[in-house]
Length: 422
Ligand SMILES: Cc1cc2nc3c(=O)[nH]c(=O)nc-3n(C[C@H](O)[C@H](O)[C@H](O)COP(=O)(O)OP(=O)(O)OC[C@H]3O[C@@H](n4cnc5c(N)ncnc54)[C@H](O)[C@@H]3O)c2cc1C
Image 1 (cartoon, helix red, strand yellow):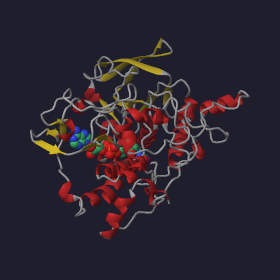
Image 2 (tube, rainbow, N blue to C red):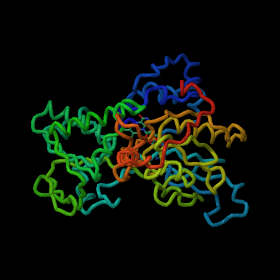
Image 3 (cartoon, protein in one colour):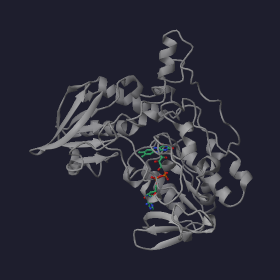
């Protein structure tokens, strides 16, 4: 989170601090931030994650600087079944230490596994060799990474909210540092689906990001190439020589730096000896696939879910958080808090609590598939603000005189509303 600490979240504090965690912190004299304020990643660490880590109920159970490299069942390889569930898990750490555990909850996220620049999902020729001039994610171009990008010609790949954030920061940098040039390349065919829900988006800031990015493009302050496919990256003198194509017509670029904001994927290698079921294309926990599939779903809400949907053939093993969504970009912290609550209840033997759903998600705005470049979008993304439709495809269908795209929002899943939803 520190690595994207300069980024302002699109969810206010009411959706980014868990109810139980709030209770623990309050007992220690914590002053809760305003529910409506928007934290940055750094705020979230400084005002929430770090104080929680220092909480006396939590500190004794945290092992810092312990990187897990592999997980399995002690003395049982993946093939052996009889007596398997009685065996402890075995976690191998990078330090060489082996830790045993009754249960494992893998919440290791996807941040360390960014998608490559290639539109096929593979790194393009030259991508690894030119890594010194490339960055993935959202570098802090106005802060720590400023000198690297000021006055440079920067190519940005991606069309999601990470790319919006980056583009807006680069525009500010260009105002302050003459000579900074920005080329924004996207795989998308239809730019309208990139901009998101505008003022109709329930998570308002996310809508505004799209609107700002659109205005910057229309003002001509940056060059946009779409639908652009990068084919290779090479070094030409001191510059990056990027070859690519728009609809089959070759169009090459020269750049000082290339930043790829094309989403993330999970690290499944460390789970090679655990019996898991993974959606074949999203690489999410299998049962979640139909709930979150960005090409077909979540025009309304991603249904809250818990231990049942998150279970694997391996008993007492769960993947939660961003990693449970695999390559799907729609994960929200509130969804993760609900996952944790249910999984912990299940592992503690409180099966009734595990089966309950105690979350209300914002009615719209969860449909943020614009944050992944490779996906074609949730029915094309949220509908334009002025249109009575659930998504771009729905709007297009209605404009053609049809009743709609047929996906429609799911009925609201309001069960028990905790303080998160106040
Ligand atoms: C820029 C950005 C903005 C976002 N904004 C929002 C928002 O506004 N609202 C919202 O709801 N969600 C937002 N998200 C999505 C999501 O909620 C966050 O990504 C959130 O941090 C995911 O939490 P996580 O715990 O699953 O993973 P992470 O926060 O990525 O945490 C994973 C942790 O596991 C550790 N780890 C990884 N591998 C290992 C290993 N092998 N061994 C041991 N430890 C390991 C990592 O070091 C890290 O500490 C945003 C995401 C990004 C990237």
